[in-house]
Amino acid sequence: VVGVVVLATYWVVAWQRPEVQGPIRPAVDVERVVAQVQTGDPFAVWEPGPPDGWTATSAWFDSATVSGVDGGVLHVGYVTPDDSYAEVKQTDASTAAVIDEWLDGAVPVGEVEVDGVAWQQLESEATGQQALVLVREGRNPPVTVVVTGKADVTELADLVRAQLAPYLKPQHRAYGSINSPMQCMMKEICAQC
Image 1 (cartoon, helix red, strand yellow):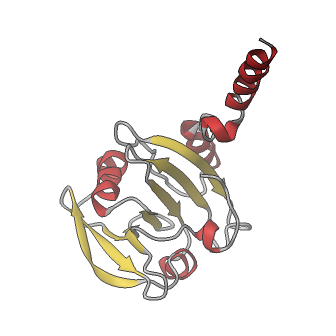
Image 2: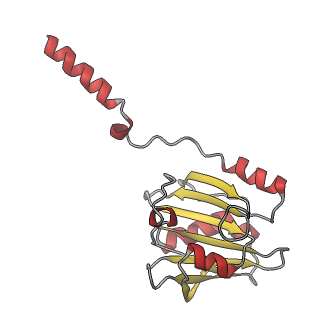
Image 3: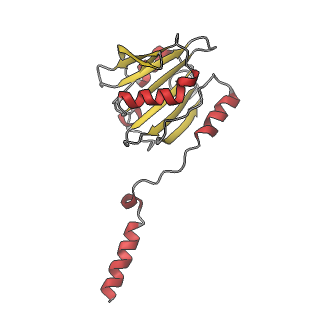
């Protein structure tokens, strides 16, 4: 009897450990972060809206003084229904600085059309990292949008369509990233997205 009680107690305690149940992630309030950015008005941002079944895992804003690209950065990360990762970053930094810093100097390899808007697809020869990028001209300052992650191209296009399409005009151009290591992992800094 004592053995059964000890075994049952051990099972209950072991089951309560996070590594047994999987990661416990707090809810991410994307709308709050976007509202703070819009209130501060560093640059015009798109309000995120992921496809159905996607879960926001991270949302933050870095000012130009700490972003590493000489511009403010709004980041929103998601887990897809297939447990893959995708993120959208919006910045008023120069597109060249963003490509160099975030995409390891990726070069254009083609275009991906989403709802009539051509997004530039880039790939880093050094790392294989890919991205979809759009430069929103007509803004002061212009805003560069980067969609990247381990999600496949179809999922990234779905994210663009769900999150950004209401704001797009056919004359906008974009660049993008797909199936690549996340920058935080390459720099050995884990944000536990």
